[in-house]
Amino acid sequence: MTSSPRTEARPRASGRRLLPADPLLRRLVLMGLVNSVGDGLFVTVNVLFFTRSIGLTPTSVALGLTVAGVCGVFAGVPMGRLADRVGSKRLLLVVGPLEAAAVLGYAFVHSFAAFVVLACAATALSRGATAVRSALIARALPAEGQVRARALLRSVMNAGLVVGSGGAAIALQADSYTGYVTMMVLDAVSFLGVTVLLAGLPVSGAAAGAPGAAGAAGAAADDPRGPRTALRDRRYLLVTALHAVLELQLAVLTVGLPLWIVLGTGAPAAMVAAVNVVNCLLVVVFQVRASRGVTDVASAARACARGALLLAGGCLVYAAAQYGPAWAAAGALLVGALVHTLGELLTSAGGWTLSLDLADPRSHGEYQGVFMSGQAAAHVIGPLVVTLTAVDHGAVGWVVLAGVFALTGPALTAAVRGAGPGAVPAAAVRPG
Image (cartoon, one colour):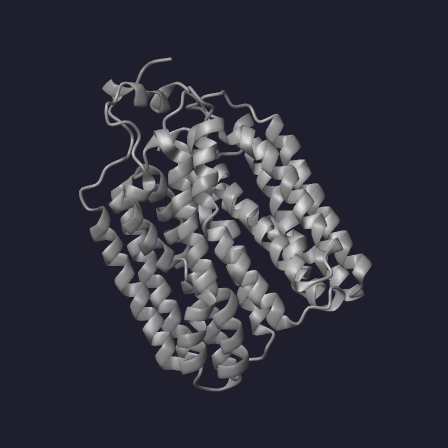
């Protein structure tokens, strides 16, 4: 992680306010809240809009979104490199309005080809922006508060998604073109709102990642080796790949578990909503607490290893839901969701630290682009992996997934053994 003179920036709120006292973190929290509410509005209605209003078949929508997901995988690195050149804040000020235009563009789509092109553009912008925001946070916040700040931002993001999804329920009830387009307009407004908040973000040129920034980024001139390249950093690539395996937990929650509840257990279909509520509430309430103690590479790897075991345990409990009456299946699913979410909290906290501490701080954009591309790849292939295991093969498939998670934790710990922070030595950093 990159140190910053803003040592007072800690993810704490005073007793009389809900938002953090630090102006920089407070602005980041507001940005995250506005963005996630918009995302909740759009994600909740987009598939129904594509099928009911545009007239695409479910298969066409799935194919188009898969192609778009692949485009998103390859967007992180070039966007991150561009952020390293022109500055993270400056780039995001351009990307935000482009994301708004892409969302509004769906209202004018009337063919499969146009849908695929627009979905690819929107997803590439979204994935790239995620990497650039991560690089901005890495440079703007002090090292000692980095993980807790990201935990706070993730809690806020989940709360915003819940609010947005609840608001979109009105459009779902109306089930009309006008209602769906209204949700997209509001999502576009959220992107513009985030851009306005970003413009007033109280960061220096160095924190924003502007060219010629002082601090660690200025060390390239004094270090004859220059900045490391993420795509040639074997340890970083290995850690990215292993953590991407842990990210398959998202597909377990959003794809595998709903299908398993309906097709493989005697539990009522309402349990799909119940486990999602449990997951969201636990993330909102406990993500910051779960990040405590994750302070360096070693502790981050241990958190990921513990989280991997919990993810494996959650899969085994899900498998057990196949047996017994409906009430027993429902209880097993809730317990499994609890264990699963605890694992998710730990692997998220560990992943943030690994992605930052193993990176060269002079190339945060590129490194975050690589790490986020690994996550994006997991999100693309995750539904297929989970379907071919748990959904198609039942309890045996869940056991296979549990084994994958259980083995990935120790592998990640071994991959980082002996590694320290990616920052250049202090003697190589040029002051001012």
